[in-house]
Length: 461
Image (cartoon, rainbow, N blue to C red; front, top):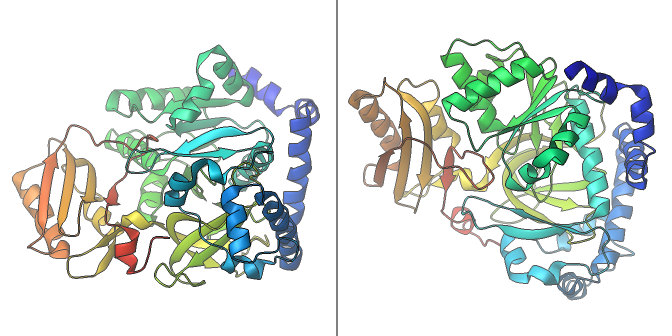
């Protein structure tokens, strides 16, 4: 069946027909041509394209009660608006989304569908997307895949877990769609040893060209395979690590097991496929026809470049509920320096991680969660871990032990953690059979419940 699926999905005639079969497919083909052309265009031409898209979005936003208030209050004229004016516009946050709800929506949007994101609290934040956004998202995702070496009809194994994605592939229609796309789906909500062995055997049989996965799920699978002496002969081209920070250590651990390179990707449920790595692996190219990305100082809210800042994203094509200057909750480094690949798009030189991955110590120091994850990398006796800051003085360390876990290992870990958080802090160590997942199915290795306002010494927005 794999050979038949390859023939059908990869045949030039199928691609030619697919690009012309429906109005939706024709719109995708048209927008795809724009994206490919702009990748090698001058920065001026790209910014002109963004300006036209942004003015169109602001004109449409006047139909939204919330955005009309913002436009009137800040004296914004959509017809004269430039990219330099974007800093005058207020930030959108999840707090605003929860408060304003339907006031953010545009009544005349076409092809609207509901979506939601989970987050660490488990309380979903609802939002809406529309037909133009769906078209641009399809194109941005395709370009990100192609930057990782994908080709039309490539075999793709998805190690994923979002419930709203899983629903789309349930039943015979979903399975048929996966077959026609030459894809397979592996649920990250079930990542026990037996299930990971099944996933490995299934992927060995499927022989995917690409694996697309949550970063933590791919890392867990790699650790399982390595610990059992298994050397997979897949994927043939590469792996796309998405939805979570890809640290150098995790990248190395994955690539030591699988016979392909990892390609980092950045985005969220609200603004997917924002940026992705090319073959140079020198930062993530922003999909500038679809997004404007800023980085700001979390405390002053002033723009910064070339050093860590909070990532702010404007989606240029969502006419159902505009995301204008959305504080996504991540930290990163924006660079406008050219990449050796020749692509004109600006890059996120580095995605540092969630703002909630930064820990505020009782003495006022801010420590990134990577400090704590490095304490556990390669540590014998620990299968999984999760380090959580409950308050400024209270921390919880959850551990799933192996047979090699001992009192000596426990004492050493607690001693090293206390060296950073302070010996007067309240540290609770929990031994678990499993680590709880976020509602999306992702693992969070580190997580802080201390507010961004307290971290930055400013306001949340």
